[in-house]
Length: 389
Image (cartoon, rainbow, N blue to C red; front, side):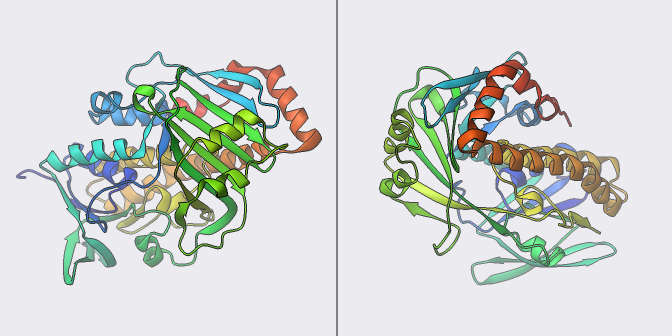
């Protein structure tokens, strides 16, 4: 490790934390990643990665490993949930091999990131190592870490909180903002139905919607069902029965093809969708937040993972440019990311309202989408997809 630059401590080995570790190590920083879990097992199902995110991952040398597990869909098809008919098809540009639009399992992405981090000479990945607290001074940050009953202090030039919506780093950095339940529940599962077309399907319905797309080699279909509901469970994600999911998608509000998709999933897990208020402090001194710890958002723009991956790339660029003044680098990082992320959060909220319209408003939405057409609809999101670090 001779010749390495300052040490950066990253709390959390999720998608954002591992991407940050690789991006920082690529700039010559030594990185310690402290992860509470004893082993990495990403809970969830599939995710969508648009070109803004895959361009970053390709730049980190992950394109070949991920391409073996990802599917490159040719379009997003928007369906009417109540009528079971296609409304419009949004073509996806797959012309740049270094920045494709991919769908893949979360666990596959995390495993690829962890495998590369685990072999990088500048990255120290510590599983079963919980971040507990930090003390910041003029020269760096001292973090309290715990492995089992053993506690130790670790000094670093900076601390990055990539530890999710319930971030322990954020609670100390800025304890006022708290995660808020959105009133929406996400049901996630996998169906064994074989898929012929490599396509993302969005089914819109009253106060709920479905998203489906193929997983690796098209042998399974990822199903995400989101509905408005109250949350009465202990914790924020729990197993759910097929009967529970089916009860949220009944006739006549949902057509037989949509109900068949929900019924085809043998095992579900449901999440309470939580968001963070806009007033989160992203960076203070030598401590900064990344990903859901800073900006947990609704999934209606398919950009939760993408924004964390972007965060990691910008963070590494800022620290590389101002390694002599880390507080200024982290302040610059927060300034560069805040407006873009807020715009994506706004789009996600807006999409959610549009997806869940009912009655005459839903009919007007469907007609408007048909008239605008798929190419123009997808062009409206080019500001997201064309971003590069």
